[in-house]
Image 1 (tube, rainbow, N blue to C red):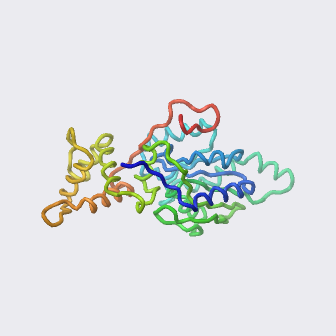
Image 2 (image 1 turned 135 degrees about the horizontal axis):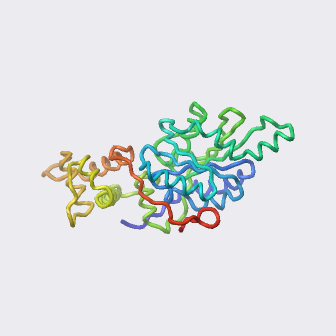
Image 3 (image 1 turned 90 degrees about the vertical axis):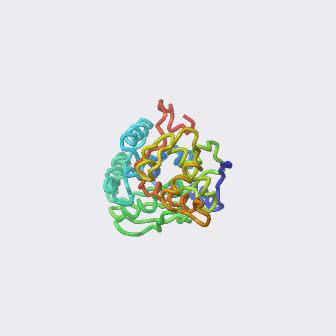
Length: 295
């Protein structure tokens, strides 16, 4: 597959908007995809939000390997961040957000109280790459639909202040990727979960790459879902053909409709129908200062 590069113009505007808004907030909440916590981190976020207390939310935990999620949570806590595990679509874990934020800002809230400013509004910026569930998370925290949310990247195009009650306001920002993917494997994982729009991808190539990955790392899921057992020497395209034939996706001449099978594979992977996967392990060592993307 060709190298992936994806940086729409609105994302550059998002960088500037974050820079302009960071002084107005008390803390920063970064939403990550629990299936790819490393690949779903934009390394620019650390620079853009430097100096602010940080909360890491591992979202989509219902689609990730639970044991590996615990490892990632421990890793980020070791980096000095507050950590939450959530499945925003169902609402699991979201109720802990306000207590966690108040604990994160305990010293600042104490100073407010000493100045007689009890009840002063807390403002938290919510950041993350496209399609990790930022707006869905905010709507769950608010208890109603306040931020526009869809299951595709690029829906939120401008900063949105959302009052979620309890003297707490959240700033929903558009998803922001980075101009160049140095790690093409990370880029591939982002494409797998839909953080890069399918319209700019060759979906069949992407599906073949996913098939090859699953055959190597999780072959049992292919047998359970598509009744195919990967054989030595088979590539992703071979497996896509076999799965499509099993599903009966045939076109004229008895050929397999690989485009249809590719779409089905990506949809079923992203919806969790293939199982729960975490595609990355945390680094072996904690970084000395903050989070080292290259660790």
